[in-house]
Length: 109
Image (cartoon, rainbow, N blue to C red; front, side):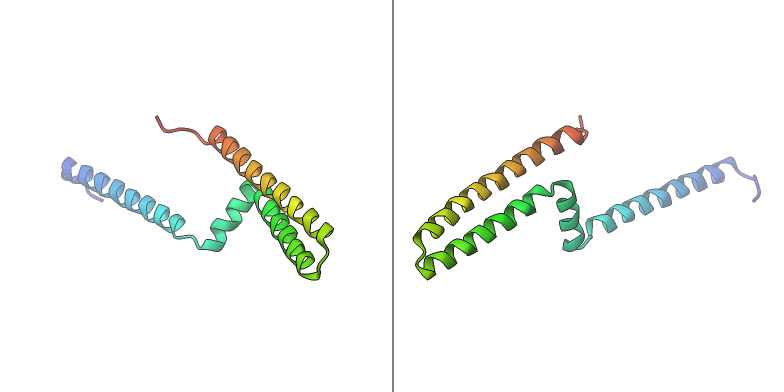
């Protein structure tokens, strides 16, 4: 590498900065293009109580509908009340997750 012109080394330095900037942009774009599975797994790891609440709600609803169809009114009523409690748990988990996420992520000012 010859040092004939100081301006040429400056432009080379600028060119290298641009290359680095484009690589950073490309890395960010790759991160955004993650599949739905990766994003879902990340959300589950961030707040695992929401999927648990969703599964509990679904199970209670299915059991309640089955009990209703089979004619067991007491069990059907119990399952519907359980479903409401599971939904409340899920909403509470969502709210707690939002509060925790807002406190842990730095805000841009």
